[in-house]
Length: 632
Ligand code: WTA
Image (cartoon, rainbow, N blue to C red; front, side, top):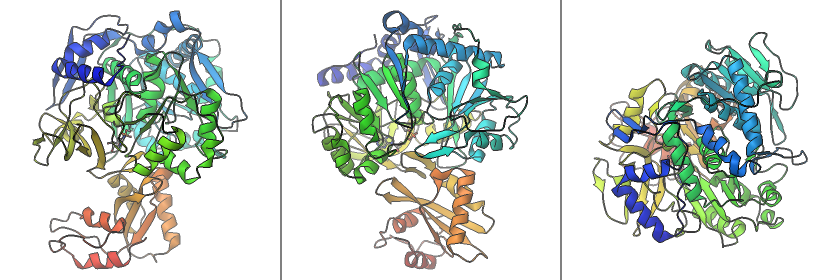
């Protein structure tokens, strides 16, 4: 069985061993899984290209480790609980045996519809069990899944389908979220009008049963296609370094890129980190509230928990429907032991009042987790007091789409607690701080740019279809290191606190967004000449989006603002809508024509006192005007 660390002393000991002899350490973990063929070499890497390979020559199928190997000992244990959007609807459960059968039937359905090993399948789905089932079905036959968060627009979906040349799209008819019905199939139809020639089949899962249009010879109903499919499906033999999935994420420039994760290393690391961070014990009920459209859902709703033989829960709805007690109601109803959510959800629920959690019995809880953005002290304290009754540990887990799994975090109740500090790196993870020249900053009580100087099994292998971009974004800033894009502080004890992004990426309600991406969307409006987007502190969202817009002819009024919001919704989706739009006559630029975002960030955050030296600007006079027109 995968190692589960039981004390702080053991952590320090294991950590040291994992750094002194990383290959030995990871080989030991990897041996706890089922491989069709053992690997010949544990690790081969160099960061310049980059080229990273783990468990070379090893053959496996991750679903045999998520499902088949559990059938003997825990076939009748519940693997998956599904809690619907509407609390009056009955919830569903699947035992490991049942999940295995459903995944096999679904895998056979995919094969019957022409999906083969290596084909890309795009998902645009609500949080229903069929999403998990079909993701695993892809993995079973060696198809590559690319899950797109169902809040993205048709344009954004089309970009992702084209980039990965997906052969199939799997969607629902409608999604139910809170009181809203979202016409998912219609969004897919629209996306497919935008040169998505690779798509041969759209598989539609009947979720709400509301009416949709079906295109002949292209669109098929899930329930028709799955009928009569065999209940077993031999798993494809995959190489350790074959692609398991692609997941798109935003960076500081250009369009979102497809982060590629591979089978072997991802399997070993997600299981290991899940068991240790959440201190999962047999019989526990684990709930992560993330959407499977993001990496947290991939690694810590589906793969990590199922690999560990856990009971994992999926929730279809939103935290405030039908009321702000929903999360706590679900914790009581299903006797949740580990609860994992995002700071933005905590802040939103905190703002609804302290009484909500008091109506429910939260005694089953053992570990509370947070992820996605820095947690402020107030939210941390509220979580600790009101949900944890001052008794439960909070694991503040720092990681990224690119890291595949949690990199820095406390381990359940084992690790020391310090508000706003994520804590120590997990075993095998060699974090470091560097200065802007790339020189490592050693010692305690230091601040710098956060890097990782040695490979770990679940790290990004490439960006799909564009390896050079992967090199450039993550491995070119500092030689021999993976650069995270975050700034961090290391305290006297060696614990890390994440300060936030140091690049042009913002984090809005835990959703990662490139400011350039939002600018490009705004610039699509024909009357917009130029725009600059920055983040600013926001009480609930963590960061809000502040857009400075130069327009030409159009009278600047609220109707124009609305049009800009519509353009952004169309280009990216509602999550990227600016909270504030300030019309300006010019943007502060350096003599080389670069926008001085530092100044714009300060003004957006309401801090106009010390803007620093503006004399080097090409147009210092615009700063005064921008300051005067700033929106509070
Ligand atoms: C931020 C989400 C502070 C960070 C798993 C990172 C965090 C980005 C934390 C990755 C945390 C994530 N504390 N900041 N516990 N977790 N972040 O790819 O800036 O959606 O670089 O992965 O979120 O976001 P992503």
